[in-house]
Length: 232
Length: 203
Image 1 (spheres, rainbow over the protein chains, first blue to last red):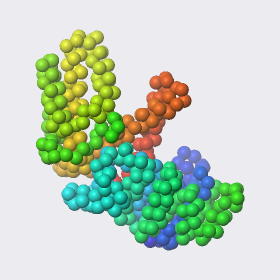
Image 2 (image 1 turned 180 degrees about the vertical axis):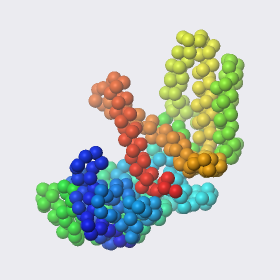
Image 3 (image 1 turned 90 degrees about the vertical axis):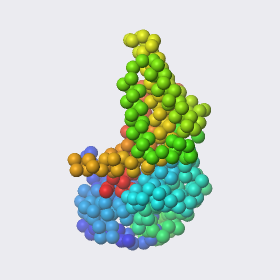
């Protein structure tokens, strides 16, 4: 599904002042796995949040499958799922199955069928035995898996994941990374994990509120390490 | 399951309370709460508390986690009762304490035996006639669900903030309460973003 930050350039300014969060940016993202890397505070999350309408552009337009994120946000959010860094903020219902059911309320009105589908989703992600467990009793990796399950339950065409492995240990980073990169959906992955970035089809390097490199993963990681991060 | 996490969490089961429709339980809880609050006198308060304990038993609430989860609330109830003792005397104080325990236990019995989504469906159905007056049943039900679902998370934040203050050697209420309020507000913003991103509330 093509995602377009239109030709005139998309800009985002901070709501509380003249600070520019993202300088004029024009992009078309059609690859299945797009990575976004860059330092903290560089504008990566702002760019990611534009794609789901969590942040609206100050100038320019963001189009997902031809739909304007600012004008047709509801339709866009049906197509674009979003996964946050901290799953605790994303899990809002008391138990695992209830949280997935909350996602499904929009598409499945029948309560019994909704629960069946939620249990199916949990089973698909290896969380079936935790269906009635309180979300707060899960490990960090399980919480992120559940947050992803809740997003994927409604079968979005695009998944935007904003540093989904930052809070996880190595084993869970690999588990969540493998899950994300193996999804049939288009993935836009913001990450500090360069191993994950290297597995993307295309990687954007964002620094100082702008896209400084855009190309194949290996070249982008090399550019980031040598030019932006300043380490070898 | 650790103590504070019991609050507001559905526990699957097959008791009479589990089998009752969510709407019946909600109406009964509202009626019970009104009777407890409006009825005066120690015998009535004792009866209300006894009924609530019986409900908790029928709902098969586990007593040990219930004690761990409820002791903070009980402490608050004791403080309130203490004030009542000072203002209105011992009988009124005991009555207040029993009333608060009865209300908390009855609410826990309902929340433990009813999935939140069943409560939301019931509320949406009940509020549907008010749509003509501009009320959005889905949003009202969602707000209710978030209030119930947010309890364990808020309690977890409180414990984390207390531990962080202790780790820095800070014991004053201000060192604990100020960051706690800030974190709750920040979490509310994050939850709002997450709901927005999931398209919940769009319809």
